[in-house]
Amino acid sequence: QDTLHDLAAAQGRYFGSATDNPELPDAAYAEILGSEFGQITPGNSMKWDTIEPVQGRFDFTKGDVITDFAQQHGQTVRGHTLVWHSQLPGWVGSLPSAQVETAMTDHITAEATHYRGEVAAWDVVNEPFNEDGTFRTSPFYTAMGSDYIATALRAAHAADPDAKLYINDYNIEGMGAKSDAMYDLVSELLDEGVPLDGVGMQAHLAIQYGFPYQMQANMQRFADLGLDVAVTELDVRMQLPADAAKLATQSSYYGQVVDACLAVGRCVGITIWDYTDKYSWVPSTFPGEGAANLYDDDLAPKPAYDAVRTAL
Ligand code: XIL
Image (cartoon, rainbow, N blue to C red):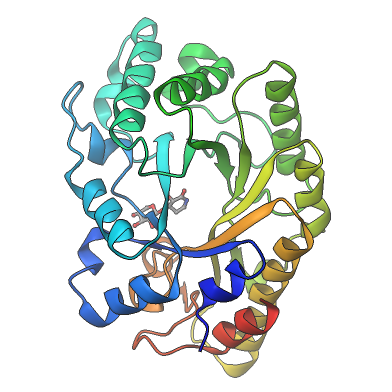
């Protein structure tokens, strides 16, 4: 039968999954990862603390394993992520403010140059906003104000002119204060001629919080600016234990995300934040929650998998 990616590709989209290095020796897992999905995102191995744990000392080993896997399986890669307040090595936060910009542009230049031609799209800046739409504090914001975002995008473009450059965040899937702030930011960046190709909507959803408000219309307003939109980290968690009713709600959420993306011409694809509950980040991050993915702990497809197939 057609894979999820085949079904998406027939409509000009990709369907991808996050993955992580410790999972790849699991042969049954790697078999599905390599066959069902047309795109992969490294869950951790291209983050700053992995790539440049000590200033000026770069280690691309883990990221290279992911790009190699992708090449062997004919998959594209979303690079994740160049500038983020989290999983940032301590030395960045300890720098005098005057040195942060150079450290940031050096990091971007080295990483985007290393992966030039291997990474189709970069999450250049990840999670710049607080929930109320104000800018999140980080060593970058403290040193440069919100200009760090334009500076980061320009550095990434100089290093890899062909990669699609994104700003990525969560809780911007629906209309609201945070997505309004993203809309204002990207509008300004485009007005200023800053290289920016798309907005990434993480889409870490939870059935107890409801489906994002007007997701399709929200995606469409970004598309109308001339930007691509991507669903970059989709999962739908619930309070455990899972039951049939919760799994049905979850299925409907997954289906609605696919519907929204397919309804927006510039929604280029969907990435799920790993495809199986076996390797989900949810249980360790949100205690008592889980069962967020399309396949269960035994790598068997769940009702949500069928809902995605149907929606595609
Ligand atoms: C998560 C990873 O999946 C975990 O393994 C890690 O411990 C923490 O980060 N938003 C993002 C991702 O942009 O990088 C996060 O990934 C999940 C939330």
